[in-house]
Length: 475
Picture (tube, rainbow, N blue to C red):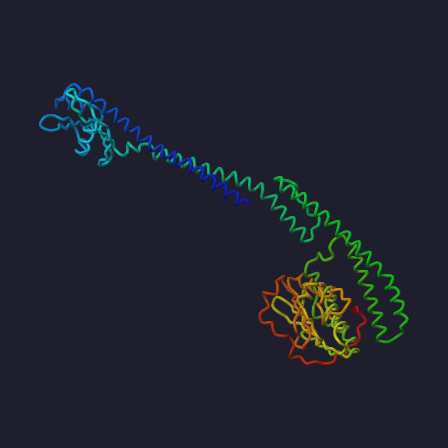
């Protein structure tokens, strides 16, 4: 906006200067020319009284030389006498031009070498017409024109520079409030809810600042209401959880009972964490990426250890590939665990009993790729599944009653690192969920080449018989 205003003022001022300076320069040149020829006419008139008295050559010669232009050789007299014309002084005009002026009886200007010649007719005492020639050099015709034009150019340049300076100051006055408004909007988008904009500047920008501050206040209020609502809803879950814990305690001993009690305990822990996070005034994840990071391979091994127990009960073959190598990612451990539980829970809920599944970890230079594959019927419409934040009809997430939050949780985890979530066809014949986790905030396009083939094809399948872990929710 600032430079646009400067350009507009520059264009307008330049057009105004040109519109006035060019005609004024032409007028100055014409005035200088008129002044030079007016002086020449006065000089020609000084010899008129002598011509009206005598046509003697000697007398006329003395009269011509006594004048200022005659002494410089700029004055000549052409007198018609018997035996031919009498020419006194330095003649520069052509004979034809002199005869034309004598016949017409009107003064004229003829171009000669180095300037112009003013031909002025004068009546003699005998009734004949003599012609007085006054030479006007070129520099006298344009005397002072160059100086005047330079002055006009200087004035025009000063006007242009002044208009640019004024436009720049006005632009700064308009742009700075807009920049502050844009910066405040960016800070508010980054989670700095205390950001406000000074209500100053032009009327329109003051109105925008007032609207922004009002919007920020409403956002803070809405977030506070949402936190209270989340805390209230989470608190309501404690009553049924207490009943579940009592019922689980009466199940006796055994792997299934231990697993149920561990799931209830983990669920209570998650509900308490939700209540605490909702009560906090600051966003929960304000730390640095290093503080919020975790080892993806370790989390995957832990969650697969938990889900493999249920997979063994349902006769599902499982596989973990690539998790033997550390993979540090900028994602909090609970968030990655929740994302994996959501995907693995979908496999158990929406594929037939006995369907195999696998989790592969692939390390790239700037990303970690996690693939969750199964041999189920697949997802009929992956685009619709991603669009609704869950799964589409058929396959995983296609059953009635799905809330559509599973894929949305996974998507938010990936996008928080600059990555993304993709749904495709796995080598097992079912669905493949690919989570692209950026290590440096880079998107998936930068490191996607060379990773299109399925990871872990050469790793053999085996039936996992890990000990049942006493932790983690069964979604």
